[in-house]
Length: 184
Image (cartoon, rainbow, N blue to C red; front, side, top):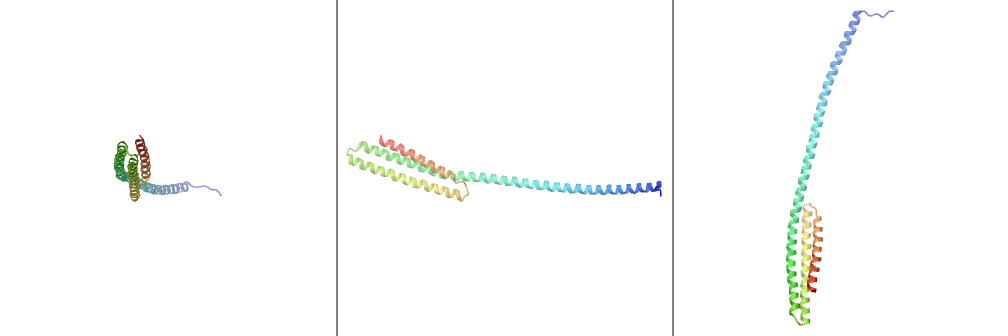
């Protein structure tokens, strides 16, 4: 048996192969076009999702930033209000203390009877003690109100402790100052 193809058979085979290749080529082009369209859609969807996420993240960041600014300004407003009350109280207290110390100095210099002088000075020292106690109660009341308002607004309350520490420092310095004045 001989396997010889005729040229007609060869042409038919080549033509069939060409048609098959062309068909495959068209199919692969169709598939490639469809895959390309799908990829473009996927890319657009991913870009859309990325843009949405980016916009959302930016929006959240902007919202958080504005909330931080709002909290800071709210905290500053609350702090300023209570700090003003504390400064007013400090000024008032120091004025009253200065007056009482002057009265004590006057008593020292004008009262010759030692018993009477001691009695009057003790009375003024009691007034100073009462003033200090009242002032301390007012300071703690103001700080308590401040802390409650800050907590109610969801703001940082750490400044309350800072102001409390400042008060103790001022009170200590003031006490030392008036003790020195009274001893001279």
